[in-house]
Amino acid sequence: MVGPFGCQGNDLDDGAECTLSKFADDTKLGGVADRPEGHAAIQRDLNRLEKWADRNLMKFNRGKCQVLPLRRNDPRHQYILGATQLEISLAEKALELLVDTKLNMSQQCALATKAANSILGCIGRSVASRSREVILPLYSALVRPYIEPCVQSWAPQYKRDMDILERVQHRATKMMKGLEHLSYEERLSKLGLFSLEKRRLRKDLINVYKYLRSWATSSRWPCLSRAGPDDLQRSLPTSTILRFFVSVTPLHVNINQPALCC
Image (cartoon, rainbow, N blue to C red; front, side, top):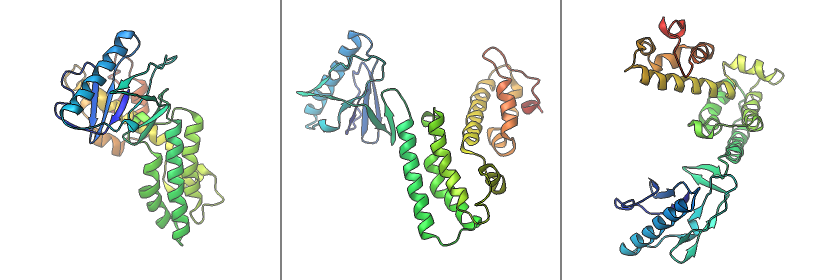
């Protein structure tokens, strides 16, 4: 992956051999570079982008143009934009998500935890009340969005990452008056909350259901389309969705499963 390029244009990807991803003023060039032909294709696209910039009287900010290799044992092929050799980057931000060469989300989890703890500390210093009616809405609105991935791509992969994210909610629930001496599980029960791990699992299972339902709508499994995804998210507990999930295999769907056929 090569980028970001701070430019946009309708004809920017004309004649591109590799994939050119554009979002707002961010553009990334990506391609398979496991063979010399792949390296050459990426370099040709870089040359084409340089000519496009010259033709439109524009200049790339080469200080922001870097190469992020996503292969094991990558030979670190050197690419050139104009007369500048692009630097190799070990991690790059993509839509505010920090991605490294191994697609490891540990750095992103650490950044999210730091931001969430900062906001939680600000709430603790600026809000005098410690009642659950005050702290819980503030935590849900201002803190939890930082530690709860809105997309599955940056969900934590390792237990250590799950633990540091969970500790933020652990700290937030302990701030509430009357719950300080209870265990974490008891505090969650009193507040009607799930652990972050269970919330991630619930979202994953709901998405699995949505994918299968979109496939089943035009297939021979009409029973999967009886319940709407919104109804499922509101009414079905995680255990029910999990029973549906384990009934699905790559080869068949258990249509006798009561979770979705009732």
